[in-house]
Image (tube, rainbow, N blue to C red; front, top):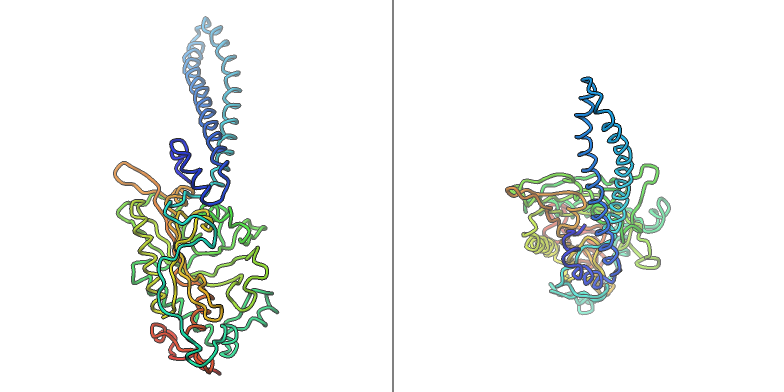
Length: 432
């Protein structure tokens, strides 16, 4: 949710943000109307409620006088009681009108995305800006062989099995077996260890969450089509640990001296991948279930931009440790999630596709999620929402895809990056 003062004082900022996102600008005008209506009806309710309280103060002494035998007050009391009956109906009606106006305004607020950072490139998915390219893709032709894709390598190594997974669960599922399973565990442990060294608190969060947690973090809007819902229990399977970590401090006031609070969550994630029919059908690039290490930060709003840069730096450190060529992009406004004001992606080079594919991302969601989840901080006498940020440090199985393809050798074996060797106990993934 956005600060209501921005709507009242600078609605054009919201209109421009909606335009840059490619979303409904008219929603802002509707919100202006609903917000004004809500405040007007709330004031009307407050006035009639104040009138009712004032009348009650007049009735009390008259009732006391009559109990003491002063019958001369009966006529005035009867008149006031009749007035009170009519006033009670007015209070009830005013309360209902104010509640309905609040509900309508609240529903409209939930449809409004966060205000974009005006420095983010404007446009759709293809309009990103490349900030930096790191590493040089291997020249396999010069090395004398054609690279195999990750699925062929995985099958040769007996590390990936999609055919048997299809028997068990259907398309877009996979088994990781043998060195494939060990490789994932090593990658996840490397990510958690790095985050812990950088001051993050490790967490294994629940992956079934309430509607409030999902809605509060912004995943029941534009992203709802990719969310799995357990209807019988009104619960949701998370697509990222951002959701439970974001709700961790809901309805709390965090001491200013406790900030920043940094958590790193390791969780299984679920996505329906709706609308992706025919995309990435080979292999394990686009799947319904995967494991991921996610960083999440609660901080003072004034520190959010610097924290965003730090998260990106930690993500880059992880990619550097894996010795995989990558690029950093500034995601265009039309490709941002509803909670994000600005987002940086790291895309790994995938040799057999001849292109870069997203493997990590980090978003500054400013105070948007904190307002929805009522997460605040106190500085002196001032209480205000915190800022929240998130960043994927290691997402499976795309990191495995990038690692296998970039570190493969001509015979189908795969060199293990030095940073992973102590955790994996192998220098090379050998053919069985």
